[in-house]
Image (cartoon, rainbow, N blue to C red; front, side, top):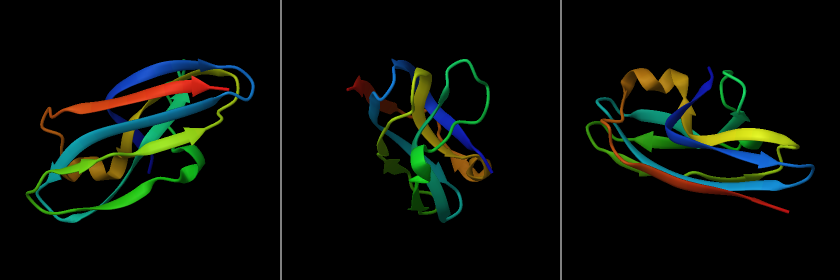
Length: 113
């Protein structure tokens, strides 16, 4: 099972040992109760591959049936040199029961030395 971006993404360029720090939030609902995995993910910006959870430090969270829940994933990592796409993500297998309902998503990301 792979992660997929949910909501908008941003591209950041890093050199050497620079760090990306990012935080976001999004809400999601489901008609069934269960657990989903959420995080701020990244992938090379020229890639169409599935995004990755940095260090696989994703959060497993509980959804209550028929109730929208807000998630606020955060991360800070050193991806190496390159241009990276960053954004909120969930494990793709969860998508079949999730309802994003065109709701709001927000976040920020920056590069530091």
